[in-house]
Length: 453
Image (cartoon, rainbow, N blue to C red; front, side, top):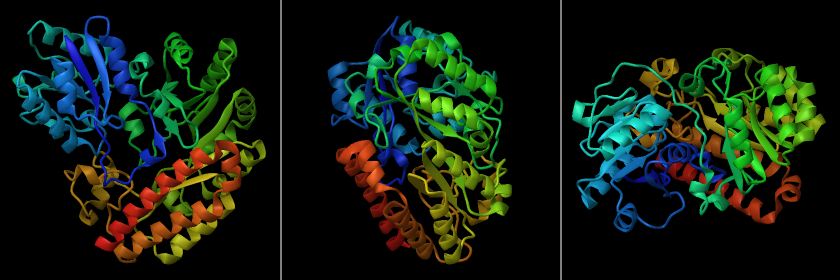
């Protein structure tokens, strides 16, 4: 069977980090790796391609089109499924990805034939083998239109499968993380035991940290040709077992790579000695969620650290000369002085790169119920849930003033806190201009939103 695997194009109006961190479609590469032995499969990355889906279908003639989804992609994905059916009514449309896991009902539409509620090697093989043989039955983890989207009621989670990175060979030069281009992404372990109240990741992967099969990980690392690897793990500095396994494997494979990782403040403080070794092995930067200047808010978010811990972690990372890409969440109860306090706090932390996003109570989080009456958009306004747009009506200042404070704070940290000279030395002018272009896009979107309100 000929299968076209599709990543949808960017939602133009959404404020996301995709202008700075443009990663490969890892999920599609995994699906490709499972299906390639029995089917003719191709990945079509519409974030890069100029060709329309209609043109691609006409040239490739697939029997099935499988489309991945993020939280903001629902309308776009349904539109692509409808487009595929318009080109050829016999094409089978399949939807998977993050949003299909979190809210499969969002894809109950006449143009969508099958929805992967969760994806593993077993149900992938079974569905596509059945499709090629024109057979059908209810499959664990798959909701099919022919059965009224009924579930088998067998619960599961997405499986980390060995990605076939050759499937995106023609696109790989475009994938990047901030100034590191090209860059690959992978996972070393799944789950997160920090269980922060605002985070979706541990609800998707589980609240228990588990290492991925070491043989799979070894093959994955050996297959990566890019000089930089970004690890998607929610907290790479989770425990001794994980850190020892990683350092042992990197030494065994004699890898010479740049590494970027997510890390908790608690992990930075607790595993300082490991950080020294990780730096010697190639660790370049950590993405750290400092979140806020307020300890009350840290408690509210169920963070396992304090604002004083943030300062200690920043001191350790400066001492070790490991870059920090810091993230913060703007609380809806902030006033103008709170934004000023945040700017002063960021100056103390001195991160290399800073992102500030409005607190987003995603529909699958308990926080959603807390703010339901104050939400500016409904759960079905899918394109708004980008973690960049203000979703909760500010309580202390007007929405327009709130957007102005967000814009002012983002400009302040980018112009006066981030070390631009150091960035130029590290990434070169070409990559700096690319990052700045992404920043300007975000600024433009905030200005538009500010004027609309």
